[in-house]
Length: 455
Figure 1: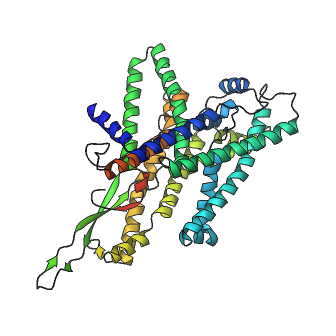
Figure 2: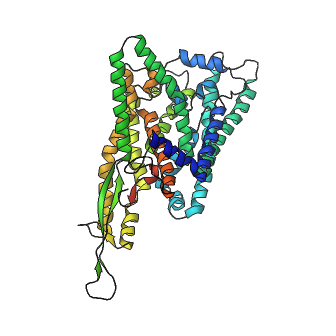
Figure 3: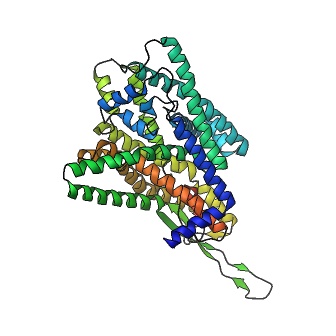
């Protein structure tokens, strides 16, 4: 406890870090406050009641979890930050297929990144208009939610503007956290929405098991949950070390004055893509929901398929979700890990991997090894993502099952580790002890390949 209190004191003694933390907390509080501001003409109590009486395993409940309850409250932040995430997915995928976006991402430097940000923001607005239309249609088709005295045209037009403004404002808040706060603002906005629903879901599960006198099942459930969290942390932080050797070089003019090459490592992360494949896949899985809103009332095979795709506990949903996660893990890893770049770096530093020739052979070796270790990481993350369906089948409360693995757990673990790594870096720069007694916390700031001793 003394060590913990001393660490908190050290954190608070660094003015720059203290200011960043306070700014981040204030912005997150503003974001949460906006989640309780209801759209004009919407009866939030009727909407919440309709959500409770509806299907508990509907995909809408998962969206409500990500938005911290804003979706079922008819809030101005009802869409959360997901339109921005979807826009980011589209822009990054275009970087693989469209030469113009490839040039912006790889060759244009800072100006290219600014241009990509502008395109992403504009695309976010378009996606918000599409998803906002589906959300307003959902409100209008839910009995008792919309004030009948308001003109349908005015209701649609005014709330479309408000929803778009809310999403753009949330995106701006995330960018401000990244610029002036602790960093990774978009991820923190998602995390704070998830955390807002966790205590209620956990308490409901505990009280439900106690009421049914299932003490042994409750203890077993908590133990399994603990090991799932530990396993997730191990996968997120897991690395594969590749030893590298610096070439020997002459020191001075005397004969035999040769310095031995220093040993170092290239660290390949088992999950180099972090939580991004989960966020990408989840954003894609929201598309059938939008389609279902527009196709409401239709019958036949298409409606049955859309119904299954909107149920996060259905077999087809989890199969598609698992495949998307594996695919996006490879895609995003290929995007952020560039073997050619690191092969050239080693060559410039006059270093090499023992037994591997510099240049193309080194590039091929790193690429092959990255591909091999990405597979088990992608499969494990995919299995974690579909655990809520398994937990629900085993009798876990539906609300808590969303946190029993799945996207919620992966995002929480990834973002928390990343934030702790940011704080630890400030402590170490000021020559304070880190947050752990030994080793270093590996956040997403150390994605892909890192070069350093013991990192």
